[in-house]
Length: 338
Image 1 (tube, rainbow, N blue to C red):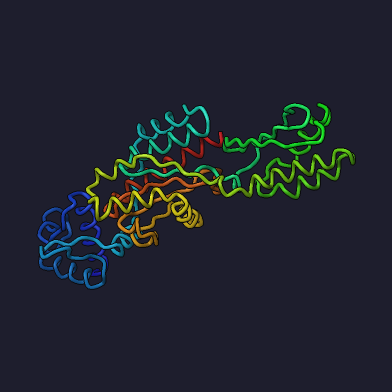
Image 2: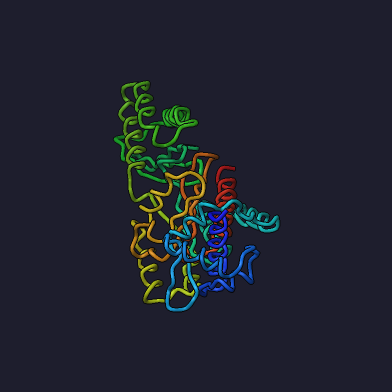
């Protein structure tokens, strides 16, 4: 019983600190929360929580604030996450469904999540390596060049130009399109290299080099590291959550500018299932030491192609942020795979 009561005390401290931004004392807890015990018992529980590293005393006042370890226990013990209301869900679905292309839907998802959480939203573009090929188009451009258009099942479009000795006739191009698209059906882009190479062997000798060149071009496109991109929205929200500039805001802004480092963190979090939460020093990034990052994958069900997430102070509304990230990710998946 004592263990559960201390968890209740920790939960109350987190909730009050998120709400008031002020250290929380035992008397305030007794007045605001139905803990069923006296302020003296609450003080004993707070002393135990402090000894175990879950809360800390920021200065000589009687109040305590949660530590990273305390927030982690709070998040791990969340039994319910309040779902968004029906009007909120309808608004999300309508706003995202009105997007005209991939760039627009990614930008809209970021703005939407930033508005819902009052924090910074980060949206990773769908990765080519984790996407499927919807269509491969071949368009002759003059006598010696082909425009190769790669369209993924998430709406991403990549264009490459292939130099050829002589552009093939329309019948050969039609056969190339047909066979390459047939091989690609139901496969991830990263799985297509061998299939395309095998198709090249099926063509007449005079067209095998062209088929091989196309296969190589697709593989090279997949291997380009520059294809990983992220979009940030709501950066100005950081100034509204009470982060002091010199001690917290400046390092966060600098960390957000280092998109390669941020992508590395997202890649690590992508390996975790469901909604992932990194709190404070768990990010292992000095600039984000006073923030928490909440992410969720989006894409095909159970098979995400990228992440969307929210970055805010460790003193964030975790249940609300988790619900918002999960909801926007779910509707983003629906829009992209429709």
